[in-house]
Amino acid sequence: MASRKSQPQDNFLFDDLSQELAHTEQVEVPEQDSLDKIREDLAHSHTCGLCKPGMPIVFGVGPAPAELMLIGEGPGIDDIESQQPFFGQAGVLLNRMLAAINQARASSYICNVIKCIPPGERNFAVEEIEDCRPILLRQILVVQPKVIVAFGALAAQTLLRSKKTISELRGQQFKYKLNDLEATLIPTFNPAYLLRVAEKKREAWEDLKLVREQLAQAP
Image (cartoon, rainbow, N blue to C red):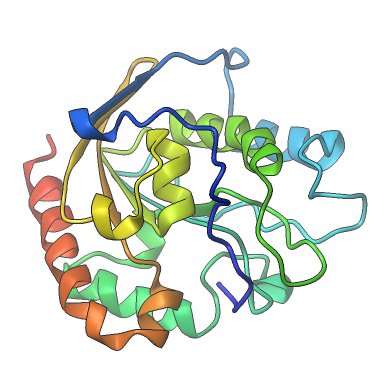
């Protein structure tokens, strides 16, 4: 991500379910859903309040299905031309993080909670995040990951319906159940944050080891 502020506002209207180390949710999705259909719906609906006609959309990239799904907060300026998430210096660090656990970027599905880049430096509103959330959940159900990594507070809080900070959520594994999907969700620091606060890389490495362990156990 770029330097735009992306932390959720203090009045995030989420129930805090994170204490249970689990999250279960049922959502309605179209029959025979696909990434192409989701992208088409996003391009033509513009329901989230952020994506306006003609605004660049950074939808996501990678195979489906994929054992590993990486979910960030929102795209940065570096992502506009490529239309791929984590494309700038944060992407370089992400590639190194994946290589450290013997994972290739090309074999993972990568996306963000927010798909567009709004003008100006500002926080995302609760309503904007809530409007984008159904698109993200549809992506998860199509990708069918075994392990989900939530990069940053916005991603972790959006998926877990939690008010806790990323420092409180990281270092743990959550059972994540969405319709018929059962996955392990591991929150950690956003690579863009790690570029600014290098001393947190040690903690992020501990989280990555959890990711590696879970992928090794995947059938």
